[in-house]
Length: 232
Image 1: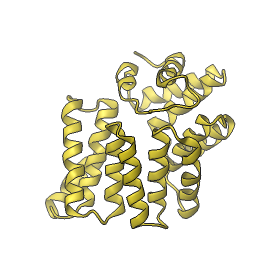
Image 2: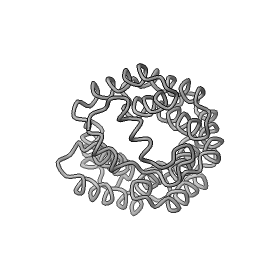
Image 3: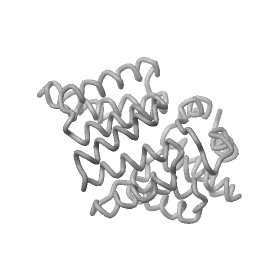
Image 4: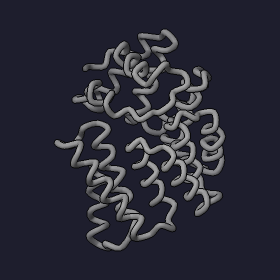
């Protein structure tokens, strides 16, 4: 992964600069999500190590705390994730990334109705919002039953990043929810195009949601992906 390589190069140039460690932590977490590495356990250990290093070096950088928020979510420590996001907002009260982090933490804690205003504010504050912000907003829209708005917003995310595998997965699930199987199957094909070794079994083990509102439980999301045609 290029981000990981660039982060390591930056660390070699300046081992006391915190942000590359945050990038490294996020990269290792992606390895866990999609089993890109040979050992998910080792990738998680490296993610924890890099995230902790960022805080030691510079706890005043909101971008550093964003990586810590992601780590807490991966560890299912949702209250800590929300506290980390709150700290980001204290450090950067008008920063789009801080609002995005709070929306992310609340969403993964199953508090999507609370998450939506934070994510919408992140979009208002950023003249060029990244695809991930639209994807997060779409996910929360779906969770509260605003499915058509979710689809429109997912499509905005894909316009910015056509290879965002998370967006294709979420759009596939939403289409199945609405009974649009052909559309869901098209999204599943995009997932396989991006990640030919995608495994639904592995992905199911890495779903990190606590109190889903629109699903009976987190496994209904996996079942929708299964119906979309994704491989076990």
